[in-house]
Image 1 (cartoon, rainbow, N blue to C red):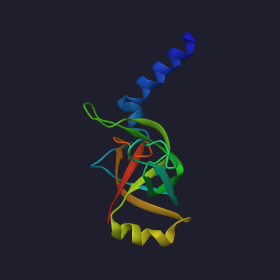
Image 2 (tube, helix red, strand yellow):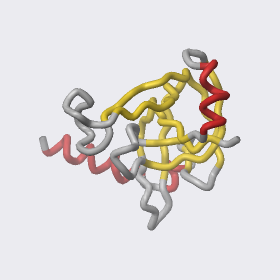
Image 3 (cartoon, helix red, strand yellow):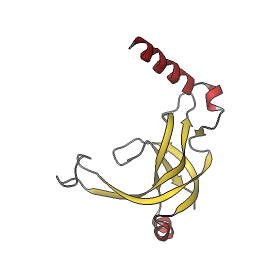
Image 4 (cartoon, rainbow, N blue to C red):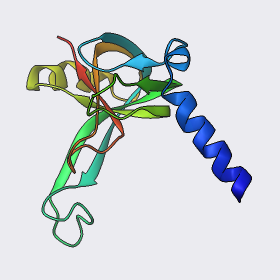
Length: 134
């Protein structure tokens, strides 16, 4: 158990060091990134309890990208963003015209660009989200 705790602490420190960040991890907004993956639609429970649509929570349907390759993210000192070592699913933040443009591409492999940010509310259903560029 003690060894496991030491390993966890080592990995946590490693993930937050500039040397690790310099590898292939992606930075959060305002940095622009390009991601590739399979576009799909998913529905999750929303307000008021974010637990069960069947029990009365609002259904929140959105577009998501299952990444071709997992990514990691890094933060800067003082940032409210959270670093993640392995992210495979990204929630997309889209406007109405972007939904309309992407709808025919559901179920296909696509590439999108935009800025990443980490989840901050119950309406965010993945650890990392992509604000998609026009």
